[in-house]
View 1: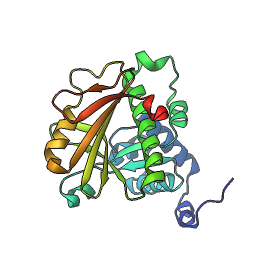
View 2: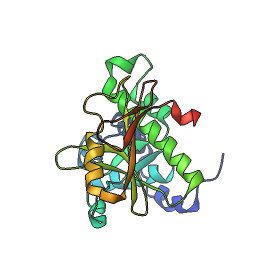
View 3: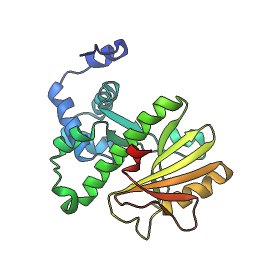
View 4: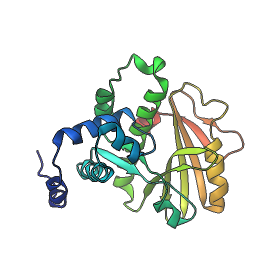
Length: 218
């Protein structure tokens, strides 16, 4: 096993309750792909909010979770809005959350978040092999329109959504359209990954609905 990075040591030294860290990871897996609510986590775990924040930082340094910051046209506002939390290993997230293949229908929302995390980390890994300056965010506006994953390279911006359905659906791409309007000429296009077979255009948008399986075939 590879040694832990030296930068992680001071954070690990602050951990006084290993069981608390484990319970936090378990709860983050149950809430995988949701907006981070430090106060809620603090109440449910019986831990101080500062402690929760420190433990999340430890889990990030150990590459167990990823904090996806919010995209905003105003760069300064990206720092004060709510991030999303993803468990990096979707298999670990499923195990901790008690999800099995048979839950694909009965627990569609939670399986959808799991698929979202899986796709997000596949794309983050691919980006790391191509251009280290590519950055990833999530987008959500005051009306609840959202894009699961926003990719930027300088001002150039792409939107990506993930649906655990066999068809894109009538509401597909609404968040992408809002993102595109905010970006203007900086918007380069979008992809909606879904559990279907065909590559389809999304009406009125510079975006395509693409099967998740294309991540492995192209």
